[in-house]
Length: 182
Image (cartoon, rainbow, N blue to C red; front, side, top):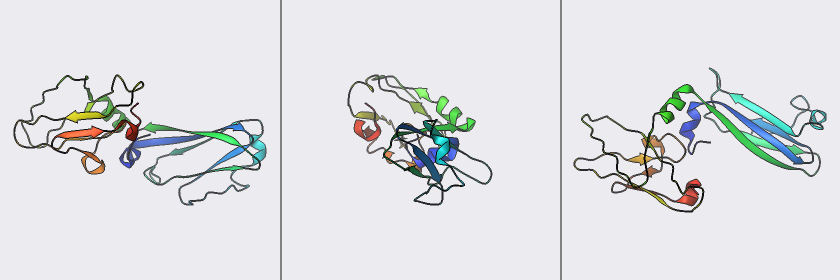
């Protein structure tokens, strides 16, 4: 899922899946009740005895947005072991923004010249070592004159006012354990 709540505004749907590994667990989701409870009208336990999967899909429409708190409950009559997974689907506008990123290569500079005040460039970077080593990622902007706003987000589209990754002296450091880069 996106690293900040801004990405939820671009989410078209979210499927929450519960896989029961042992026992008989049921999935309950609410956007209003912080402690969702199982009701007989919402779900009966008899339907779960042969199927180890529960799935609930929340879909954005004119009356509902996914940019809200979602409360998730798991209910079981007896001992149960389960695994939750989340599968978001994003709007085409969001997918186009992410697909439009210019990929950066390790240790190779990329030159950009801005001729107007509000120009921007969106880059992406996937470290070659990301699945093997636990390293800190450092991004640098070498500004020749004037000043720029340099900001980033891990696993999401960066929005200047909605990210904690804003440059300090034209540098951004992202610790590997903070955003699961390893």
